[in-house]
Structure formats: C-alpha cells, structure tokens
Image (cartoon, rainbow, N blue to C red):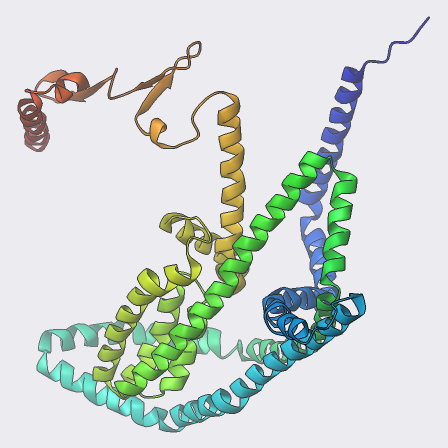
Length: 462
C-alpha cells in the first residue's frame, strides 16, 4: 500500500504542537511567573555593562559620524591621502578619540562649573531654610489676619489633621527609620555598582563604535539567512524606522532640553530669581520627559522660590508658562518635527502607561516605543483593509453605518439612516434626510431644539 504524504496534515500537526507548547509555557508563567521574572532580572543585571556599552555607542555614534564624515574625511581628501582600508581604520581611531575627548570635556565642564554652583545653592538653602520657613509663616499670618474667613477655615483644617499627622509620625515614620536607613545604604551600593557598570560600558562602547559596520553587516547576514528575501527586506525597513523614531526623538529631546535649560538660566538671571542655575538644571532635566516633564520641574522649583519670595514665585510661574508655550509650539516642533506621528491623546496615554510600568525611564522612552507599536499596528490594519478592497483612510469610516457584503458599498448615516429622539410627551422619528433638506434646515433645527426643551421640562416636572 502506497502512503500519500499530505502537507495539510503536517501543518495541522505543527499547529497542534505549537499550541501545546504555548499552553505549557502559559501555565508555567502563571504558577512560576515571579521566579521567571526574578531570573530575567538577574540576567539583565549581569548584562548591564554590555547594555550600557551598546546604549552609549548608540548615543555617541552621531558625534562619531560627524567627526569622521564632516571633519576628518574632507581633511584627508584635501591632503590627497588615499582612503584605503588601513587609512580608514586609522581615521576611525582618531574619530573615536575626538568623540570621547569631546564627551569628557562636556562632562568635566559640567562637573567643574555646574556642580559647585548647585552644591553652593543647596548648602545655602539648608543654612537659610529656617529663615525661609519664618518668612513663610509671617506671610501666612499676615494673609490670615487680613482674611478672617480663611483663618477660621485653615484653623479647622490644622486642628483636624494635626492629630492624624502626629499619629502617623509615631506609628509609621519613626518605626520605619531602620528600613529607610537600609534603603539608603542599598541605594549607595547600587549607585557604586551602576558607576562601575558605566565604566565597563564606556570601554565596550569604544569597541562597538570601532566595529559598528561589521556588527551591522553580521546582523543583516543573519536576518537574510533566517528569512526570505522579502521578509528580510521588510525587517530591515522596520529596523530603519525604529532607528529613525528612537534616534530622532531621543537626540531631539536632549537638544531641546539643553536649549530650554540655557534659556531658562539667562531669563532667571534677568528677572533676578534666586538660585537660577539650580532651577534651570531642574527644568532642563525634567523637560526630557514629554508633556509632564515641565510641570514636574516647575512644581519643586516654585515651592523653593515660594519659601524665599512669593512675588518671585509668581513671576517664575508666569515665565514657565510662557517658556513651555514656546517650547511646545515653536522650539519642540522645529527640532523634533513629527518624529513620533502620535496625537496628543496617545502621547499622554503612552507616558501614563509606560511611566506606571517602568517609572521615569518609561516616561522618557514610552512615547517612541508606543509610536513604533502604533505604526506597526496601523500598517497591519491598512494592509488588511487593502486586501479586502476597503480604503485605508479614516475619513470614510467616520459616518459609516455598514458595508454591503456583496457590492462593498459604504452606507453612511448621512445618506441612508434615521436617528430617533424619544420624549415623554411625544414620540417622534426625524429623518436625517429631512434635517439635511435645503429649505427646511432651519425649521427642523428649531423642532430639534424644541424637542430637547420639552424633554427637559417633562423630566423635571416628574
């Protein structure tokens, strides 16, 4: 008897096998998820120097390319030097040295110029903090003396919550001091480990930048070996899109925050705001976080200025509003453009979601990450619609009621539908064609308003 080999049954068997494996993995994830994620965290901690190295190489590569392509290559060509393999290798070495030297100079300048002034500002704040508190108390007492209603309300709040605050200090805060000290100690150890990983990461980043073309070539070779030509081309196009989205957003946001910090510093010097450098650093650093960043930086800065001079605090808040309007409407779009392609709602959604999952890092990287996911999902949906012969734009679907199954005709509410408006006094069905008919537009609109008024009257009378 001859056996007939059918690929259909092989496909069913492979599908069943994959379903069984996925079910086992899902069950394991449910019962051992904590252990699995703990092991993943341990692997990530071990690989952190390598991750730091690749991240640093990715951030420094634009500087390296600028030095190599815009500075050294024209210089070599002007000197009539042949760009053979050995010369390019030597030029890459010089470009890496210039890049690392440039970064070192920036970090050194920041440490020697900015850090001492920030330290002096913090020291001054600590020394003068009691006087700031006294000034605030005097200002509050004067405000309450001039407004007896506010004074009685505030006194009631103080009496209400003072007992609860005392209980919280005695029952929660003081017994938890040991845990607080333990947490601080672990934070110091974690900081030292992070600095050591950063040092190793810098060394790794140098090797990555020195052989970046080789790494890229090996990655492309691997992709074409595992996938078909068409799929491999699509994967490379997707990777270029991811690089464009992440690189454009991160680099643009860093440049935007640097400019905002510089503008903030000189503006605060002009309006004579206390601690201008410290506040400018806070505003510039928090500005990296999209949407919520300006408010996160303005709130502690405003509270600090409020302790010193409430009028200056008011000036600062007005200035921050103007600065953020300038950043959001002029500077930010000029630098970033439409690098994410997300609307304002999806920006807030991505920041909230990734910020809740991954903290500050999630708030910074959430927008480009969600933009990539959004772009891939949009492309998949558009391709599916095109396969069915439907338009991929959103406009035809806004007023869509249904699509006929045979002729694929779009039936919208504007052309063939009715909307009903029921009242307790009278039940009426108004055709939308009647609402859109030329001479009766105004009359039917009045009828619509009259029905709404009648409904409210009958509802409240009941």
